[in-house]
Image (cartoon, rainbow, N blue to C red):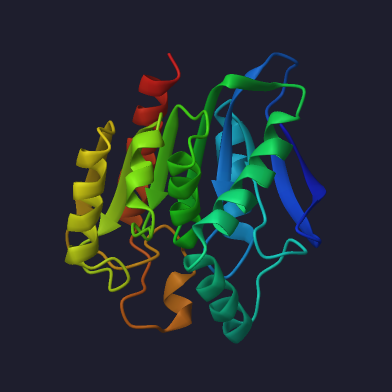
Length: 236
């Protein structure tokens, strides 16, 4: 496999995503990877590489700019703006998806979007926007939206993996998501991992020293297997 940084533009902002491509020349199922709130970093890039090693064409998009993380204050301002504008969030996801589908080996009939933290929110908003996706996976992702009726547009199978002790995804948000998915008649599932905090897939999460944020190896491995099981089901 090989990797490449791809520069693209959206809304006048320079974005730099990370493509990981398996060996060969045949069309491959494709996965859009949406990074955690701080920005595109080694966590999302490593996810793309792991997927390519399994035979998927993967592109880790960039929704902040310049293909790098932001300082905390700038990040919070940026995320605050996106959280209140699902249209902007969806447009950024669409821009990344366009880059992925423009790759010669992208199989447009087998596309998934996955995301971490706000990236999971972004993947869900892309599905709510009616994107032609087979599967969507959110890892410790925010589940809320200001446009829940748009769940009726979701064509993908949906999986969200949430820690029971995640302060950013409290029980009322989980219940609202359940109601949204039910009303939209979505093929969905939620894996609630007991005793697990936010950002459980990121080995460096605990370095932030923030309450309710911690890596959990067992849940990281379990949620990854659950994602692959969903892909096997969705891509047949």
